[in-house]
Image (cartoon, rainbow, N blue to C red):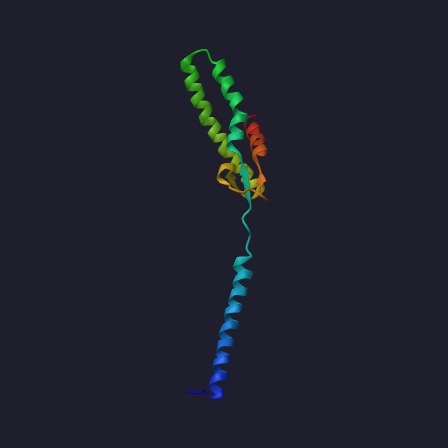
Length: 128
């Protein structure tokens, strides 16, 4: 069965129109949606922050004479430290306009900025 030249041209034109429409749609999507703001990612090392805070924690344990005071003081210090850590991380996220991930959750960190030292600095400022 042979097709008339008119039907063959029509199929070619329809196929070309469909491909052109798809190309325009994909290009438009890329320009409008695909090229939106990219997510910036920063990393922090929680173990390093904890190590920097460990000295203050141990000093508070040693300074207290009463065991009951040691326990309640330590619990209060841990609760306050958690609040300060959260507050400091939120401040850094606002400063860098990025999402912070812990170093242990990142397999490969090439191109990611490390905010660990900044986090330790901000916690120190919060404490006054």
